[in-house]
Image (cartoon, rainbow, N blue to C red; front, side):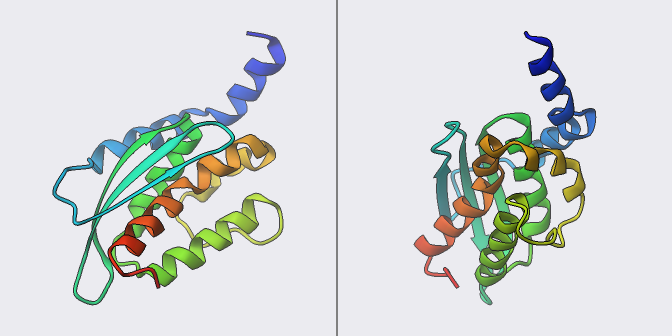
Length: 149
């Protein structure tokens, strides 16, 4: 691997990001989720499948994910999954918009615990779609369940 590429990898794939990506194991995607969504990155081919169980008020009760992405995409999915419980569709949509503006350098960081762990990926536009995939997949699931906000 060229030195520049390995240096970029070291900036993106820190031990903290790698540890965060492992947290996805706490959110298995079972077949029993009533709302299912999917999103795929056009730039890198990363994919996220999301299963949601929604309560009577329309809030996320339970989440499962299957993520085929780089460690940054996996870490982003883990951040999303850890924060999704109790969220309504409109909150997820608003948070995705805030994430999109933040990674593009057009707005402040959204209130998302541990977001600073993936902050170095903002400098790599090819990673931006992978970062947003969990929100897109969740909104897809919510729209199919009739809870699109």
